[in-house]
Amino acid sequence: MGYSELKFPENSLFLVTGGAGFIGSNLCEAILNMGYKVRCLDDLSTGKQENVDMFLDNPNYEFVKGDIKDLDTCMNACEGVDYVLNQAAWGSVPRSIEMPLFYCVNNIVGTLNMLEAARQNGVKKFVYASSSSVYGDEPNLPKKEGREGNLLSPYAVSKQSDEEWAKQYTRHYGLDTYGMRYFNVFGRRQDPFGAYAAVIPKFLKQLLNGETPTINGDGKQSRDFTYIENVIEANLKACAAPSSAAGEAYNIAYGGREYLLDIYYGLTEALGVDIEPNFGPDRAGDIKHSNADISKAKELLGYDPDWSFERGIKAAIEWYKENL
Image (cartoon, rainbow, N blue to C red; front, side, top):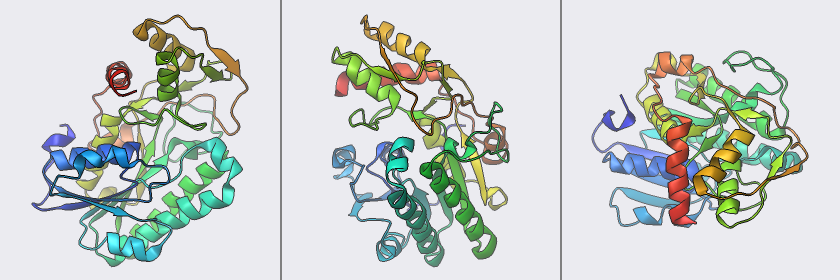
């Protein structure tokens, strides 16, 4: 069963923090399309107003400009809310190495503020963004929950801390929390601009503009690239999950493994361009290989992703062709 068949009580209100971002705006869109109410909270530091402008005429949509680092903002945003989808965070491993204090306050204290606000407002489910970076240098594939290594970046520390705080809120306060360990999400509205842009939109933008992309490292690193539709499904199925599945973190991926060089040449072929890439140094804090065991999410959340990498990359290419 996909997420569109899920049923929530009539007039359910979903709060999506970071709702003007890549993943957040897609969650807002999906929930509105299902006929439920959405409150989007975003300070627009990394999210973009243009990602959510299309919802402004929808009577079920409300936008709140605010920062999760402020507890009062979080308290007000959670008023009357049934489900919280906490996506607000700053991403990027390399940037976190440059800005460790900011990542601590934004990603850890911000999430803790949201947990506390959700608890005090009687929220039913608190689903939050974690990351595959919590596996650190653990070398075994596939990555499996409960088998983590040494963390390699302040970003990874922030996400592991979020998981630990969420467990405490389930254990002591009865707040149903569900951690989404995202693996390299890609798809429509992912930002291709900036020094810290994710690799697929960045490559697409450069190739469409006739520029020469740079691959960090030798291009033989592999990732479990996960199309945005699978992530929407995981978040909404967590909202419908039993309390017995709460207080846990889950790998959210397709369960595949793609090599960066293969992706690069697949994109050049799909776009009909012949551009050889440059190769740069490895990025600090990056892992070499990543691939997820998704059996826990399948078993406990009913997560059953049906968007393969091949299907997702075709959809992403079409979107970027039309929107760049």
